Image (cartoon, rainbow, N blue to C red; front, side, top):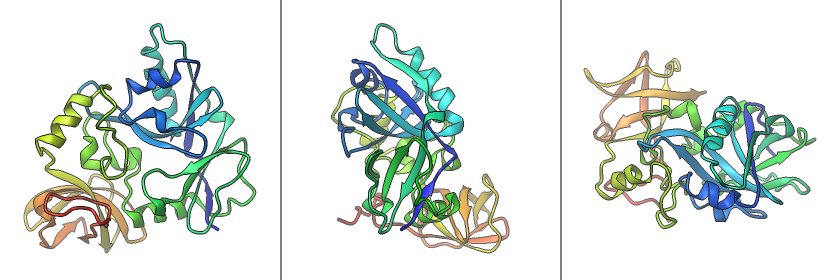
Length: 276
């Protein structure tokens, strides 16, 4: 039963009667989907439509809890607070109140804590927020990292670059991180234009790594041409940002390693729909 306590994850609390409407106008997904037993995957974007932070939204009573990268929690709380205006909400970094967990495989959804299935993929498992590490959390953060790399899931600032990454490059459409019907939110115009005009030229792609693990930011080469760069990786698996034309089967090198793209069934490329 793989359950991992993730100390590098934090929590931002948004409480108050306007909490849903407040976040609805700011984040990329439909906040109304966060309820008992259900989570929402979403992102906060810059006004120019570039990634700043992503998180899972879970509900508990009169508050919404954002499971985010712990180093980003103060920044996220501060940015959200700037938009409060007359909204009846209170925003704070509540990271010290919670231990964030991920479970997968045959690990049952825990009871008595804030928990919900991971909304990105069924294979990703579930997320849980508890007052302290769960007794059964015997897997390590590194185990979780291997699991998510095996699924090809980008993870926050390990793979996305603030003020640069566009959500569709990072698979947010296929991974249920964007609502196309809920109306406006910050950065919505560029996100929609990128989709409907087919402007995506590169993607974050899972890769098999043969050789030493390249450092993040190492250029990926096809022959002499630079076609992308390495992002996160571990134990022969990784995520690389690649230009779409680099996915034509040519040999790819990154530092002293050879990279082989491993396109997962969930990923939709221009000539390929995701598997049902």
